[in-house]
Image (cartoon, rainbow, N blue to C red; front, side):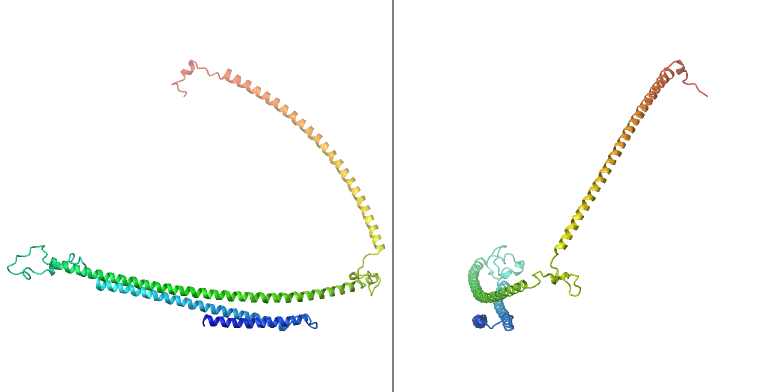
Length: 375
């Protein structure tokens, strides 16, 4: 499917959708101005909306599929061009390798005769070329130098001309290949831009139609909401008037009595307390306040007695603690005196023992004890 055919088909479908929407809008306006029309759910309108949404989804899916097909075609074309280019490059590389194997042999090089390992085997014996009366060729003498030089120069000129021609042909082929590739890329870019422009145009048209449809739906919804609000205000006013005229809001005391037992009240029809009931509640609250005040006074008196008793026992405990501290101080003083007396006795005993008994003076008896056995 070409882009032109796809664009015509899409335009025809869009015109049909737009005409159908206009018919729906005209029918909606007719219903709005028709006084006999009742506000409610229109199954035919809902079915039409569902059909429009399904048609829109199918149209969008077809459009996406067409553009996907276009993208695939472009990708296939680019892949084909890329394959052709790669095939040409492989063919060129193969031709270069074949030329090197066939035309650039080792024995065809200029220095092949200088590096030929079979030079002596190929050399002809003396006397085959020269006459009998000629002088014998000396070792190392090159008798064919001039001819070989001329042939080599001719061969070099031929090689240079062939290489120049090959280089020019190669450059021309590469230039043609690059130009062909550039043309293909330009065509692909043009196709992408064309498809993107068409897609953007179709998308903008679709957004415009969708905005128009949404605006129409919004206006229709606003009109329905306005009619519903007006009807709701009428219903509310009627309900308020009915409630004002009803016995429920009129505070009729007879409604609070049970029909089966007149002395019992109906909780679901409670209308408030009577004056006697309110006074009884006030008197009961006053009695409760007085009883609470008496209980609080009794509680304060009990707390005062408890506080006085607590202070008394605190004073007794303080006096007992002072007495215990005085006894402990006296016991500490007595113990210190006893310790001082014991220390004095210990010092006196130490002085007598080490000054009078163990004086440790060395005399003649000390030296007489050396070398004497005690056994």
